[in-house]
Image 1 (cartoon, one colour):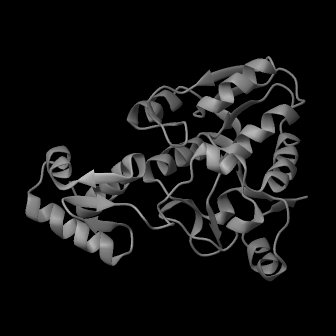
Image 2 (cartoon, helix red, strand yellow):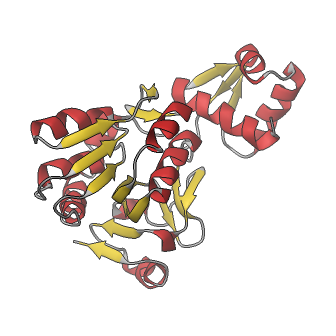
Length: 248
């Protein structure tokens, strides 16, 4: 396993558990204790974690993903505007991918297109889709307790059974140079694969995300339309040069 692959695996476990023990990482990654200690020192120097006695904890905002409960009550008005705009992009008979997350979840009540098929990795999305009598598929795989998102290799394998007219993805960071980013490398893989399997991609991000950069890159701004409630004026020109903006 390459060094950067170990780093991603360490951050993923921290993301899922909040804290990891040194011996746990030795066992899971199959490397020596001295190697893991060096990895933790390097990750701490990058401000990706905090070393503690016998292990490490995740403290940096760039890799710390808020839970569904926390995100549900943040920027509610902005999410509603974005969700309505995004739902208007769906046409009759389309097959779409809905990313896990509160903003994509908020899209579901606004979907008016008929005969739509939805594939999602969001556990919270399924009940809402069934309530709307929308044909839906939930990817199988490992469930992140914190965000109720299905991730991992099984989810990626499941996704390869589908092709999408459009996908709607959440992003924690939108930056002209670094593109779209998210804290968790595992979720980034799922989002990136959905983008690759889609005829057209949309990224949903409220204005507080513009200019932010988190740990794992999804893809460049040019590769998807950006849906936001309001583009901050000091970002408008540079973002517009990179991608199409749909705003409320």
